[in-house]
Image 1 (cartoon, rainbow, N blue to C red):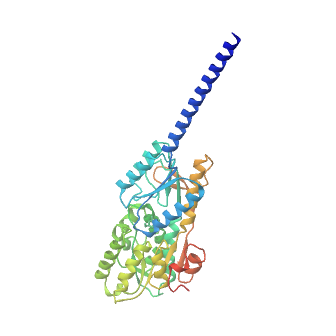
Image 2: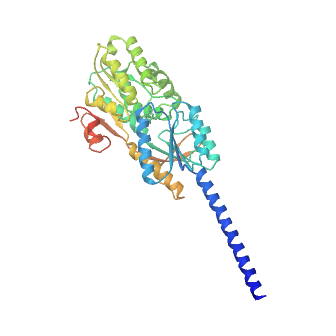
Image 3: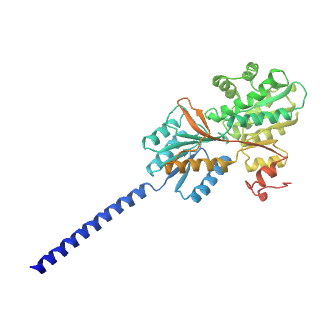
Amino acid sequence: MKNFTRLFAIVIALFMLATVAVGCNKDSDKEEGKKESKEIQVGIVLPTKDEPRWIQDKTRFEDALDEAGYTSEVLFSQGDSAKEKTNVEALIAKGIEVLIICPHDGAAAAASVEAAAAEGIKVIAYDRLITGTDKVDYYVSFDSISVGKAQAQYLVDKASGKKGQPLYLYAGAASDNNAFLFFEGAWTVLQPKIADGTFVVANSTEAITLKDKAKLSREELGKIIGQVTTDWKPEVAKSLAESNLTSAKADAKGEVLILAPNDGTARAIADTFKSDTAVTKFTVTGQDAEVPSVQYIIDGKQSMTVFKDVRTLVKDAISMAKSILDKKDVDVTAKTNNGKKDVPTKQTEVVTVDQANVKAALVDSEYYKADEFQNLK
Ligand code: GAL
């Protein structure tokens, strides 16, 4: 009897052990499944591979996320809002917890981030704001108004000093909120000079009509941008510059000033103005410190660029993502209204770069390697 009781106890104990083991297995299966569907923690969507600017961002993101130990995936939307939406859906299906997205079109991206938010995913608008939705949790960006101010100030500083100097205006894509901010910043610096006749706008009748208004509404900015948009595309910039020069009167040539919104369009516009023999000298702005434009600056073919240190922006976006994943407070410095809410924002300053500081700002700072350029002094 005693033996039987002992045997019975052993059988029961073994049975309990087996149950626990099976239970454990189930749990770890669940864990496995969870890990599989949560394979990617941070999803990143960037506007296009076709501009060096966004390739910079991708590289910096991958380096920094690897180092931080997060799984991530970067997808490009190739200037297409429908593809952008598919990209976001693909990342949602991979179980991301944080979405970092730079929209192709700030308004159209609202639907994508709403889909992400419905799955409990936190959304960080990266560089460009997403408008018209309350489902943007954070915004990391450069100070875009000061980008435009820096470009315009450069033109003012390099002006000939002769009254009536021709000024050509160009802008980014109207679907990009930043294009409005850049232009708004530039306008605050250029407008007094246009109003007093120091500069004469050569290619926008809307800008001439509005020349006495220091502060423009979004609609007014839109009117000017509508006449001078490059859509962020060098080929559009080139053909617009060509048609501007074709229809320009003789007194709109000579020594001119050109507000070009970014480096890709600046190079296209600079090449076009250079090939017009009636243009004797030009000062042209840029933005992004793209490698080909840095070479243009060294060679004296583009006057300046506004350097936006993508390392800082990426670092800010990642530390935001990290705080979100660790359920900690997120570090922000400002708020930006997107038409639906004040989005908590982290902003980064920008640096004006021309021949005088190109080496110090971009090579000595280890942003680029010296051997990426020729004739760097
Ligand atoms: C802006 C961005 C700029 C520039 C431009 C063209 O939104 O802030 O840095 O790259 O788009 O893509």
